[in-house]
Image 1 (cartoon, rainbow, N blue to C red):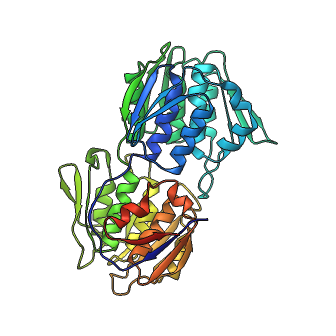
Image 2: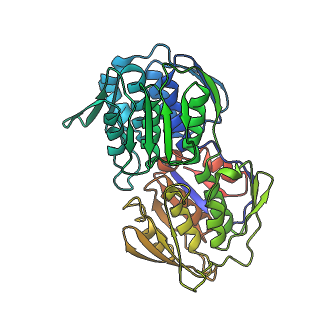
Image 3: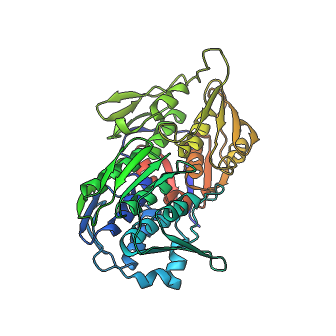
Length: 435
């Protein structure tokens, strides 16, 4: 189990460039299975979850060539479908949440898709019902082996239909879209997710020859086509990482520039951090954050009531940033209620922050009230264990702002979502060592 040792209390300074988007990568990489032609993908993040998926594709028989840093070509002209029934696949697929998105493309092109029950973060239940209900609506037969926790869908030919999703699931929408592009007839998906990463997937599929309209809305219409061709695609910067660096700058009172952030795809993120009192300036396509020497003050609502920050489907705030926002609030002036609606275990890391001296009341599994210190007292260094990707980075930010030397164990969770995070932080002045 890997460990970070962090000497906190130092101001950072300089520029940091966000990696390619993890959540986009997991969708885009699965889409290469939809065509036998070559697909080139750029700005792929070098992180554990993405590298696991690339290895899975290689084991499936996809020909993969690395062209340069973050740049690969994929050719799925000789896919080994027998691998899907192997014990090796049942083992490998279980270790990656994103492996569920292999099912849609495999079902669409080869008439069958299988997946073991995926693992991933321990942040509460993550239902797969939306995915499989969508496939069933398209005409697939569903089966589930309870003993092996093994899911499967099969269909001779998918047929387009109208469906109203029970939730605006990003991965569910992506999976159904990838299945529908090769279905016979027209598929209409209402209550579809419309995150920028899903827009990226739809635009890429259209360049490959798909016919998807309504991109960016919650009503997608897909006219099925017989086949798709190759294309080249570049991933967006990771908005969760961008939010992490905003929070890091504020907590450490550092002057930072976050480069090439694709401002138009950030949605609510800048305005939510501004509500916490953080100064964010747009300089071209960069974010500039000055050193907050006098701290930052949370805004109340117009009537004076306490600010509530909650997650919501896009264009609402992504749930992946609530852990970061909670940590940043611990040193703000004022109070805020953090409402994590989607996952019932994601706030359980606050006990570590309370140990460090933060003033937080965990109201229930979904809500926490934070009373900021306004930097009148600093967080204290401690020893922690990273429970999931986002909580791990939140604890890392807390440690970088704390007085003394902190230790974070189980940093493999952080490595799942952040590329070479210790090297990149040292480059802007952080005192962090990987043990």
